Length: 161
Image (cartoon, rainbow, N blue to C red):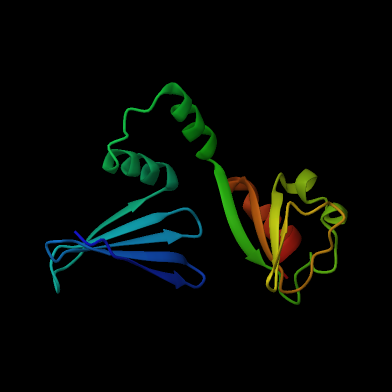
């Protein structure tokens, strides 16, 4: 059995994965930037899809079942509980972003929002674990992590003009 997975970026939405089945069926999985997952099963070419939407936690449970790894020990359940509200997001600083030209420290990102800047992609360079003194620039792609519920405050403070 040959397993082909075709991947596509969906700008502003997330990423799409398409898997061709042996029987001619196609499974399309859309991973939204928000953490939402959508599965589209096309039993045969031209058929109407069967659609299932899942949040991140539900998707992890389904993946465990599919991989034959469901019956998690207590430690895995505890990790799942922590991960339920964890979000990892990417944001791009535009010309009007309030964070452009400011340092992580001067914005008080962590104390004001609870969000951590994990890395900055600046052109072809990656700044891993940037220091608080790191200045943010227009065009920077920020990889941040924190509570899903804290992301709107981060966007207002750093990204949105």
